[in-house]
Length: 150
Image (cartoon, rainbow, N blue to C red; front, top):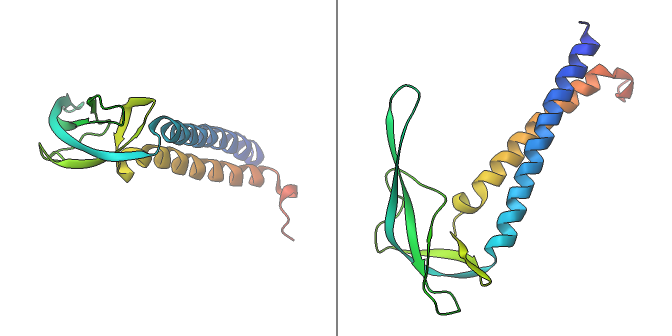
Protein backbone atom coordinates (compact mmCIF):
# COMPACT_ATOMS: atom_id res chain seq x y z
CA UNK A 1 0.00 0.00 0.00
CA UNK A 2 1.51 3.34 -0.99
CA UNK A 3 1.22 6.59 0.95
CA UNK A 4 -1.63 7.96 -1.15
CA UNK A 5 -3.79 4.86 -0.54
CA UNK A 6 -2.99 4.89 3.18
CA UNK A 7 -3.88 8.57 3.61
CA UNK A 8 -7.00 8.13 1.49
CA UNK A 9 -8.22 5.17 3.56
CA UNK A 10 -7.17 6.66 6.92
CA UNK A 11 -8.66 10.06 6.09
CA UNK A 12 -11.91 8.56 4.84
CA UNK A 13 -12.38 6.42 7.96
CA UNK A 14 -11.42 9.15 10.44
CA UNK A 15 -13.31 11.86 8.55
CA UNK A 16 -16.40 9.68 8.20
CA UNK A 17 -16.51 8.53 11.80
CA UNK A 18 -15.73 12.04 13.03
CA UNK A 19 -18.49 13.55 10.92
CA UNK A 20 -20.99 11.01 12.22
CA UNK A 21 -20.02 11.75 15.84
CA UNK A 22 -20.19 15.51 15.28
CA UNK A 23 -23.64 15.23 13.69
CA UNK A 24 -24.84 13.02 16.55
CA UNK A 25 -23.60 15.62 19.06
CA UNK A 26 -25.38 18.41 17.23
CA UNK A 27 -28.60 16.37 17.03
CA UNK A 28 -28.44 15.55 20.76
CA UNK A 29 -27.97 19.24 21.54
CA UNK A 30 -30.85 20.29 19.29
CA UNK A 31 -33.04 17.57 20.83
CA UNK A 32 -32.24 18.69 24.36
CA UNK A 33 -32.82 22.33 23.45
CA UNK A 34 -36.21 21.64 21.86
CA UNK A 35 -37.54 19.12 24.38
CA UNK A 36 -36.47 20.80 27.60
CA UNK A 37 -37.71 24.28 26.84
CA UNK A 38 -36.79 27.46 28.62
CA UNK A 39 -39.07 27.63 31.66
CA UNK A 40 -36.98 27.60 34.83
CA UNK A 41 -38.26 26.82 38.28
CA UNK A 42 -37.15 25.27 41.55
CA UNK A 43 -37.44 21.58 42.30
CA UNK A 44 -36.66 19.50 45.36
CA UNK A 45 -34.50 16.38 45.44
CA UNK A 46 -36.82 13.87 47.11
CA UNK A 47 -34.84 10.65 46.70
CA UNK A 48 -32.15 8.85 44.72
CA UNK A 49 -32.15 5.92 42.37
CA UNK A 50 -29.10 3.89 43.37
CA UNK A 51 -27.58 1.99 40.47
CA UNK A 52 -24.85 -0.60 40.96
CA UNK A 53 -22.55 -1.71 38.18
CA UNK A 54 -19.61 -4.06 37.95
CA UNK A 55 -16.81 -3.52 35.44
CA UNK A 56 -14.98 -6.22 33.49
CA UNK A 57 -12.38 -6.59 36.26
CA UNK A 58 -15.00 -7.20 38.95
CA UNK A 59 -14.88 -3.76 40.59
CA UNK A 60 -18.25 -2.61 41.87
CA UNK A 61 -19.47 0.97 41.48
CA UNK A 62 -22.53 2.80 42.79
CA UNK A 63 -24.10 5.86 41.23
CA UNK A 64 -26.89 7.98 42.66
CA UNK A 65 -29.40 9.53 40.26
CA UNK A 66 -31.44 12.31 41.91
CA UNK A 67 -35.23 12.10 41.78
CA UNK A 68 -36.64 15.62 41.67
CA UNK A 69 -40.17 16.85 42.35
CA UNK A 70 -41.48 20.19 41.14
CA UNK A 71 -44.74 21.96 40.38
CA UNK A 72 -44.98 23.27 36.82
CA UNK A 73 -47.26 26.12 35.77
CA UNK A 74 -50.11 23.60 35.29
CA UNK A 75 -50.16 23.11 39.08
CA UNK A 76 -49.82 19.30 38.97
CA UNK A 77 -46.76 18.08 40.87
CA UNK A 78 -44.33 16.27 38.57
CA UNK A 79 -41.45 13.97 39.44
CA UNK A 80 -38.51 13.00 37.24
CA UNK A 81 -35.23 11.13 37.54
CA UNK A 82 -32.10 12.91 36.39
CA UNK A 83 -30.18 11.38 33.49
CA UNK A 84 -26.91 12.05 35.31
CA UNK A 85 -25.74 10.10 38.34
CA UNK A 86 -22.71 10.53 40.57
CA UNK A 87 -20.88 9.07 43.53
CA UNK A 88 -21.13 10.52 46.06
CA UNK A 89 -24.54 12.07 45.35
CA UNK A 90 -24.23 15.56 43.88
CA UNK A 91 -27.23 16.78 45.89
CA UNK A 92 -28.73 16.07 49.27
CA UNK A 93 -32.29 14.94 49.99
CA UNK A 94 -34.48 18.00 50.41
CA UNK A 95 -32.06 20.23 48.51
CA UNK A 96 -33.54 22.81 46.15
CA UNK A 97 -32.24 22.62 42.57
CA UNK A 98 -32.94 24.80 39.56
CA UNK A 99 -34.63 22.91 36.76
CA UNK A 100 -35.71 23.71 33.23
CA UNK A 101 -38.74 22.22 31.50
CA UNK A 102 -41.12 22.49 28.57
CA UNK A 103 -44.65 23.45 29.75
CA UNK A 104 -46.19 21.06 27.18
CA UNK A 105 -44.01 18.18 28.44
CA UNK A 106 -43.16 18.74 32.11
CA UNK A 107 -41.94 15.13 32.38
CA UNK A 108 -38.99 16.02 30.14
CA UNK A 109 -37.55 18.35 32.81
CA UNK A 110 -33.84 18.36 33.56
CA UNK A 111 -31.67 19.80 36.30
CA UNK A 112 -30.35 23.13 35.03
CA UNK A 113 -26.60 22.54 35.01
CA UNK A 114 -24.02 22.55 32.25
CA UNK A 115 -23.12 18.92 32.89
CA UNK A 116 -26.71 17.66 32.79
CA UNK A 117 -27.63 19.66 29.70
CA UNK A 118 -24.53 20.05 27.55
CA UNK A 119 -21.80 17.56 28.47
CA UNK A 120 -22.95 14.81 26.09
CA UNK A 121 -23.52 17.02 23.03
CA UNK A 122 -20.24 18.86 23.67
CA UNK A 123 -18.31 15.60 24.01
CA UNK A 124 -19.75 14.07 20.82
CA UNK A 125 -19.41 17.26 18.77
CA UNK A 126 -15.90 18.01 20.07
CA UNK A 127 -14.52 14.50 19.59
CA UNK A 128 -16.24 14.19 16.22
CA UNK A 129 -14.80 17.50 15.04
CA UNK A 130 -11.29 16.46 16.08
CA UNK A 131 -11.63 13.15 14.23
CA UNK A 132 -13.06 14.90 11.16
CA UNK A 133 -10.19 17.41 11.19
CA UNK A 134 -7.58 14.65 11.41
CA UNK A 135 -9.35 12.80 8.60
CA UNK A 136 -9.50 15.97 6.51
CA UNK A 137 -5.77 16.59 6.95
CA UNK A 138 -5.03 12.99 5.92
CA UNK A 139 -7.24 13.38 2.83
CA UNK A 140 -5.36 16.55 1.88
CA UNK A 141 -2.11 14.57 2.19
CA UNK A 142 -3.57 11.97 -0.19
CA UNK A 143 -4.26 14.71 -2.77
CA UNK A 144 -1.27 17.09 -2.49
CA UNK A 145 -2.38 19.08 -5.56
CA UNK A 146 -5.34 20.34 -3.51
CA UNK A 147 -2.93 22.02 -1.09
CA UNK A 148 -2.23 25.62 -1.92
CA UNK A 149 1.32 25.43 -0.59
CA UNK A 150 4.09 26.43 -2.94
